Amino acid sequence: METLRKGVRRVLLFQALLTLLAAAAFGVARGRYDFLSAMYGGAVAVLLSGWLGRGVLRSTGLGSLYANAITRYGAAMLFLGLGMGALKLAPLPLIVAFAVAQFGFLANTRQRNEAE
Image (tube, rainbow, N blue to C red; front, side, top):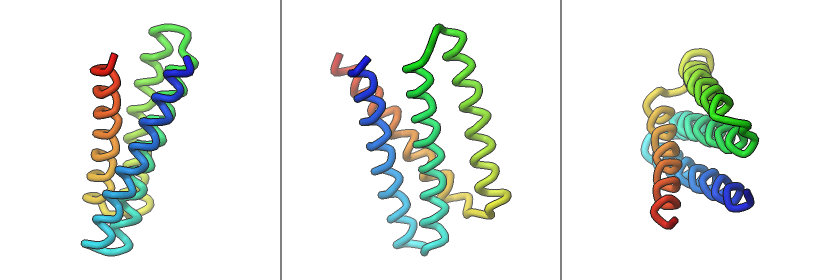
């Protein structure tokens, strides 16, 4: 269980680092507004990964994992929609940073599986 907790922390830190790098790139290239949009998109990905990790750690069976996954997808659509709709954040940096942070999740997961 402790190995799983460390893995979750490593993934979250890696995603946060990727988010900062993507946001910095947008900030330098396009300005503060795009920096904030990218930070929001990356933060959504980190939040959802943390939610996934918490769900896996507290899982009581396959059904709870499926429920967690469905809820996460709904939350992703809600948060991304709120960012672009209600908050009027720039869509391109928001989605790119979200995708880059999600890639960090996949890369870390794959790396861990290959090490085992």
